[in-house]
View 1 (cartoon, one colour):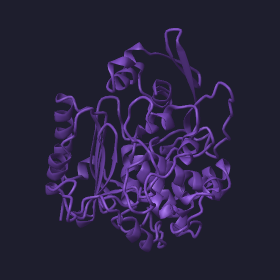
View 2 (tube, rainbow, N blue to C red):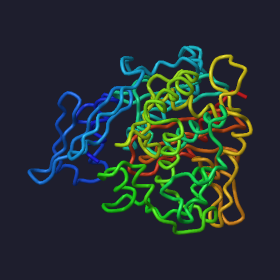
View 3 (cartoon, rainbow, N blue to C red):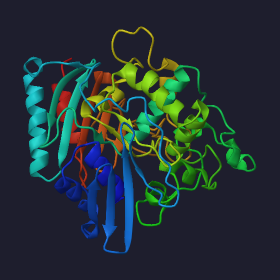
Length: 415
């Protein structure tokens, strides 16, 4: 964990050694035992003479843990020579002096209050009708800084899948996804069920040593290959279970369908990133060259906001009359799952709808809102009733008061 996160924080986000160590220690004091060395493109994390792990940085697709037994250089990304830049091209960046003053003052005040209370909010951004109305950044962070979204990356991966479906390259109803599943009931699992995390696969999402989540993200096997080996625990379609493995299986299917790493990266560049004007956004790869869509998406706050804004009607940026996401796909992507236990999850998105058994996730926020959520309190709200997106990125061990903060922002939005 130290090697991977320190590598990405250094090379992608440009964080200082002090911030990197502080961020790791935010998880546990045990991280103080780890020594971290950055040398050219390699990050080495060691505990005395007991264990040493390395991660390698590759331009444009991030950091990958190095398998000391079988080092496999990843292919070159078409954008390898382009500098990281978070300058927005699609969302209208109103000059600060033309933004609603009260709203800009509010987000700046919220950020200061979060800093004083130890919440470490690093970026707050408000978009309405495709325009940035307010934004504020913490010390050392700018509108160009790519920030880790953790499980917000799941929603990013789902939108990428939606782009494939829009272009006729995928069908969420498809089953028989992998040859490894042909001889058991896992062949019944569809992409639709994986996207809704109702696939029935056994997966322990708790983040403790030895669980599925930690073995998948920080163990010797590539993340998607680890997820591929999970057995069934429930009949497919009946039980919702939040599992990062499900996301990485969608990523693996996309990788195989598009024809491997080079072809997948080319699709990302030409059919996804370019139409949205994304220049700072990275989805890191596992050792098989598959997107780790569950966890390792980096983007500037503006680009996270632009990604979320694609879910407001399905259109991308500019004046292209063709939708970036097919409206019928978007409707399906925002439909509650049909599980017996928790329907408040759609295509890698949390829904704020109320059910007979369960309350809204955030009762004080709009009932039609839905969310991209991530570890360390990453929060992105899409509120269709306000035609708005609100983004909070930071590094908090304690809960972020999303209802209070986002509620205050919505009250000041122009009608």
